[in-house]
Length: 271
Image 1 (cartoon, rainbow, N blue to C red):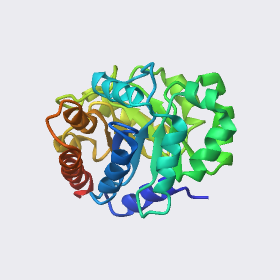
Image 2 (tube, rainbow, N blue to C red):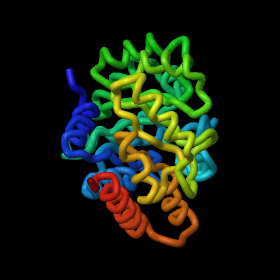
Image 3 (spheres, helix red, strand yellow):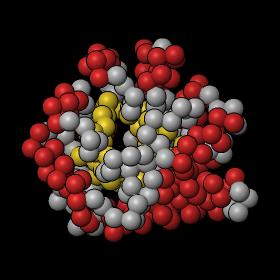
Image 4 (tube, rainbow, N blue to C red):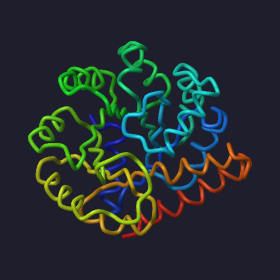
């Protein structure tokens, strides 16, 4: 049965467009702002929205997202509070929401309980960057049992035999890491990424979405014939530092995020 995420990619494929997915940290600076940002993104033409659940031990996050997670944790954010905030948005006409979350958080929360909360709050899929490989298939089966997608990450340094195993426990799309290293804005798309996308295209029929280092509209064009989506995190999350620094108020930051996301979505959707 098609999932909300797969339906987005099918629609965009028929329109010869790439998907654009922005990332925001839940609770930076608070959950009311997070809800307003998600609503603003929904009005900016984005196709999917990735929501990071803050974690004290960064996995693949660069300094911008690490700082954002720290601000959210310092404000007293909780997993239950995040789910309650997302539930408030469940009935609204918004793009599918995907949570990026540490497996350690899921494990402590309780696997079935966590997945039940995802369904109850309108989450469409999960990205679990520290999911142990030996547990991936079992968890994938559990996730699918709740009607959710489990999106897996593939890095440039991932051995190709391991990539093939990862793809067996992946749905929705493949999160293709653009560069070796942590998240963060970079100046250009690496040639090695294009080679990896060409290889992945032969290995799976799942859509390929590229993240880590994508930060400008001009980063989209080199990916157009090889990828089906682009993901932007640090370039958006850095706007929220301006609230912490007192440089901009919340409304101004939300407006900036919306304007940037509109520009990125237009780049992704241009034929």
